[in-house]
Image 1: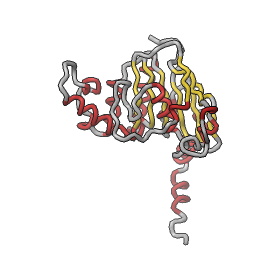
Image 2 (image 1 turned 135 degrees about the vertical axis):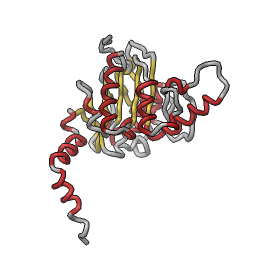
Image 3 (image 1 turned 60 degrees about the vertical axis):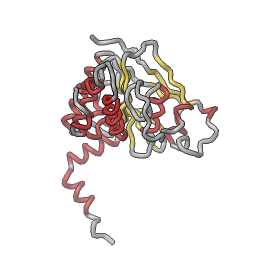
Length: 255
């Protein structure tokens, strides 16, 4: 069943009047300086750009403002390995849609190990319900390869009609798995889900009709896939591999 285009999260707005100064982190990030209102596609929205542009900071703020744990997981997770999230979430306003999600998950690659450890710890506690690992394929995430455990979450834990915020989900996925991830995203979109994804992968960026926001020192700009630096560089490399490698290595012996 294909649900109508009714997003759970319509927009994020920065409450600029409340920010005391744009000189300190995270408000000194160019993306925050330029942020006013950001609209989300009902299906899939991507945040892309080079390292240090503020993608993860913005994703974290959106997730925490929604009610997710800063280190990831569903809204039922409350663990904290290290309180390192920024205060940006307190200065943004989420414009929610009229439709409410049945499911949701904040997936962030950098703290996924902590999430897996928390799941194992909770399963060791006495409970009358099924173990949490049952929702992740029935096997401890620590007993799988990094890529397998990532994909197990996407495949088994994500149930549909959910808001899924993913920060660099491709980090442990092979190109083939990234293609499988695209197919899984489509399955979940058809079940009424909405995705917000920060990624460096041109493969994952390829979902049709998605909105792509490029974050750069100039701020936030909407782009087509073919206009992104990720796509352009990958295409150039694949089409001119030997020439590009030769140019990259030609300066090795220079003083």
